[in-house]
Image (tube, rainbow, N blue to C red; front, side, top):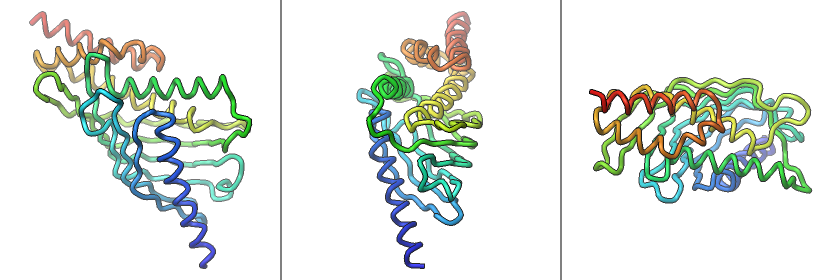
Length: 246
């Protein structure tokens, strides 16, 4: 029993250290995790108090804050070369999309993650780390704070559509932490931009100003993510046109 407790504590500490060490290297922002509870026997556990900071130049307290992330890991894979994560459920994340003259905070973080992934592929390590497989990734109950710092801190809160990804890192090669982060964050970015595009036409003139700020720097990033994000940015553009035509 003592040995099991020791293993559990070492796993919890390793996960926390990994998130707070490799997270900033990939996203180039502060990443903090309050606690980890993972059972080596069942593979189920929780991550609590995850906070992803903002890039330099943005004023809101954080980009993403999550009270709880539920995880289920295949127990036999924990000590193997490929860790199989059967479920990740991000519960009620608090996301801030802040617009500014240099684009958005989320767009900048995604650019950083994409750069880390590209660097990893071009300069593979001589000592490759563990590979990952995530069978199911969900984000549920999230909310988005649309922040307009240039107009006196005005903001609007809108719901984040639920996100569901499957079969990430299938096969013998798995997926690296940087690649996994890119796929997950891209999905969050796309959902956020789509929701912002749908909401912005209801914000009046302040909404048009906000959309202009966000849209100015985010389109290129959206193109790198995929069709969904591009359509979201187009919706922001439509919102601007409709507002000025009223």
